[in-house]
Image 1 (cartoon, rainbow, N blue to C red):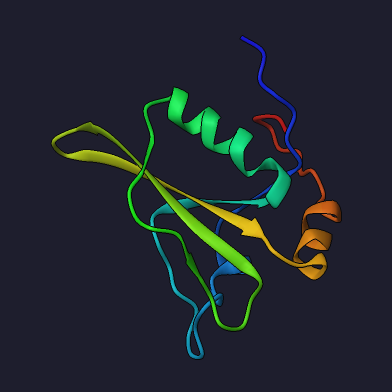
Image 2 (cartoon, one colour):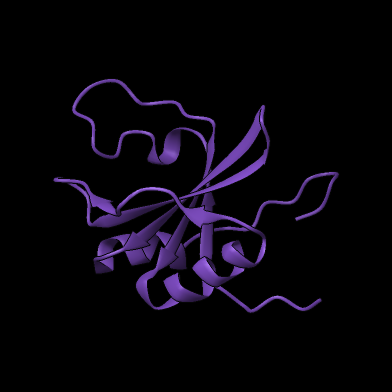
Length: 109
């Protein structure tokens, strides 16, 4: 199976944890994908093919030019997976994607 090419930034942890907060970083059990607005539909399609569905209305943050789309996959009664697509809405946020660096580990890229 070949996957479409996307210019994304997988962002888990503290790098985006301050978005929308004035206080301490927030910690969640999801995966954040930072994508350019032109790649949103492709990203959404990939998730929907894997049985994810958009589980909430999109929302924006007052101090950061991103729009959050939350997708949920329910594996069984006790297991679910959340993926948030953060859509870049400004050139400043798009620069984060363009300047992302691939990191290698023993498990691969």
